Image (cartoon, rainbow, N blue to C red):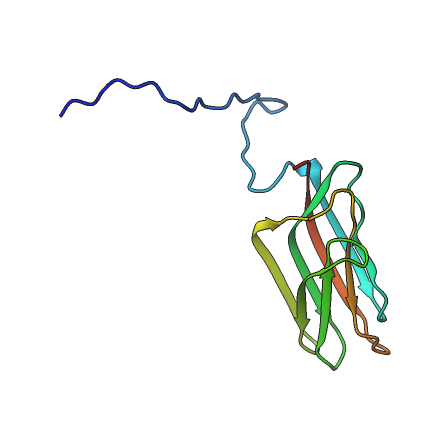
Length: 138
């Protein structure tokens, strides 16, 4: 059987090689569009986890780590806007660490909003959260 000579419908993207003269492919976003944060939760008050990315932009969540140094399991609620809908909950056992790496960035639903975290009002309890987010326009 003879294959017809067909031109490809999709053309390869053009790449610019800058600085070191090499092409680099990253899984989520360029380095300068990534945001790293660390916050401590000490009471039942909703706390900003990732600040607003700027007008017309989203912060899509890539990775989150929670550290619980208390003697009780703690559940942390994660929202993608202040006083917004809880998008997921992270339960951290007593004296333990839990980590979630999203295979695809968790998309933020509203532009220019802060991700927040909240837990129950526990005395003498500190939960440390570390997060990584990617800035996106769409």
